Image 1 (tube, rainbow, N blue to C red):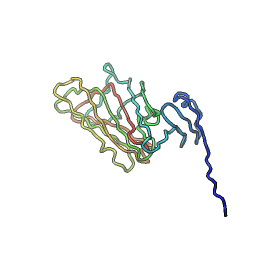
Image 2: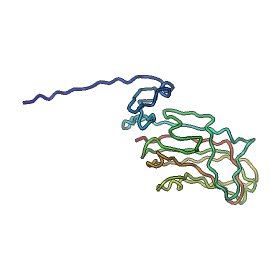
Image 3: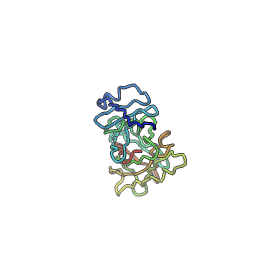
Image 4: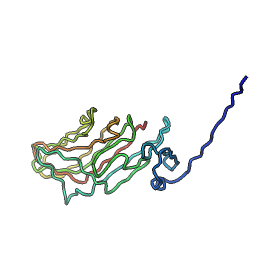
Length: 209
């Protein structure tokens, strides 16, 4: 009669800071522990491990500095522009900012297929002809998944060239194409020109795979 042995292998990961983690060479299979959780390199990038209900959420905020009250972005009537954000100021917790947004291409990404996120878009705006002008904000670029349904109508209360605040929250999941190629936020001016500035984007992970 054969003997069945119970065996166990104990592995203790290095405990470092998130700042130290970002200086490490990217090598698939590497795993470390930081103040924000357990991180592993998968597919050439750091990913935070999801362990059931213990999977931590995280968030990132990007503030644009290119378009300000003294240098507003004008979107002409009938024109669509990609929402600008040069990520001049970045604040984050538990997520590497470049995993979710590339300021060079202005594309938004997800960490894994079937993750869910909340995205908050904030900016200041005005319209020279507020009575007949509105904007259409959309998440575009999906290959098959109709992400453009994540949209909001940007309206201007009475007052030509009066400054207003825009704030909208969107919830979405990420498909494989979203993770690989990313999508982008667009703003179309309808009925008149639109000016926007002080753009902020905030993304919170709600559920990681």
